[in-house]
Every structure is written in C-alpha cells, then in structure tokens.
Image (cartoon, rainbow, N blue to C red):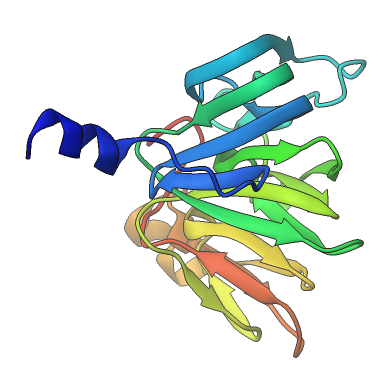
Length: 221
C-alpha cells in the first residue's frame, strides 16, 4: 500500500466515546479532567496532559498493582488535563468494559490498564495464595458507573460458576467470590511455586470469571 493508504488504515478513530480501542492492543482514552492508568503504559498523547505517579495512601492507590514476586508496589499514574492518551501494555490485548452504576468487577492488579475517575476502587490481597505468590495476590475491585480497560494475553474465556481456575491464568471475576484450595497431590511433582498447586474455586449460580490462555506471574510478561 502507498503511504496515504497506510496512514488512513492505521490512523486514529474517533467514536466520541471516552474510552475506545484503536486496535486490539491499544486504548485511546479521552482525558477531560483525570484518568488513572498503569504506569509506563503511555505510548503517545495529544493535547495538554500531565502525568503524575500515585504511590502513597494519600494519593489514593497505594499498592494498586503489587509486584507479588518482590512485595513492592508498581507505580500507577494519574493523567490529568485535556487531550487524548494512547495506552498499551506489552502487546497484551485490551478488553474494554463499561460498568453500570453499582456494577463491580474484581481484576488481578497486573491486568488493569486504565479506568476513568468516576470508578470507585478497593484494593485487596488474597493472603491464602502467599504460598504461591510472595506477598499474596493483589486484586482491585472496580465499581461503576464508568469505563474500565483490562488486558489479557490472547483472547480470554468467560466462564460461569461453578468453576475452578488457575490463579496465574485468572484475570477477573464479577458477582462471585473465590475460595482457594490446595491440590496436595501436585505439590511434590510441580513444586511450591506453581499455580496448578492452587485452585480458585468459584461457586454459586451467578456471576462470571475471566481467564486467559496464559499463566501470568506478577512482574513477568
């Protein structure tokens, strides 16, 4: 293709939505005030924007993305001003969700890409997984209304309880809460740090669970 065709095919789109996908791997977020995003995810921006790290409790997102392997927090940035920001994370696929009022989703901290400032959030750690992930397993519960962008390795699968999942492949869940179980028969065969030794068991007859065809450990891609 010639350069005009190339630029036309790959140029930005404008649907008028605050969050939209430029392609499978890139989120375009319109900033009119503030958007929160995973630090290091910005690949380009236009307009008058400032980027500020959020790493303290006073900043609001202490421990938001926790490096399970080291127990250290991964910085989150506040993007403020007026403009457009393009966000991506290691060529992972971006999944865009719009939450209704009071609708919640709990996401593995490693898999949150961005959310708008109307979203309420709560940080939790599953200490029962400390045997597999040093420091536990940090999640973020996001409650609407508003937009949330999460990332997955390849295409996700959405399953409904009852279902058991590998913590390393579990991206998110909604309207259900997991219990953690240890498969002792696998302990000696595959080692203490393998996700298969642990299972997240989702029960009940409501909600959904998002898994990816990839075992992701914090800090590794």
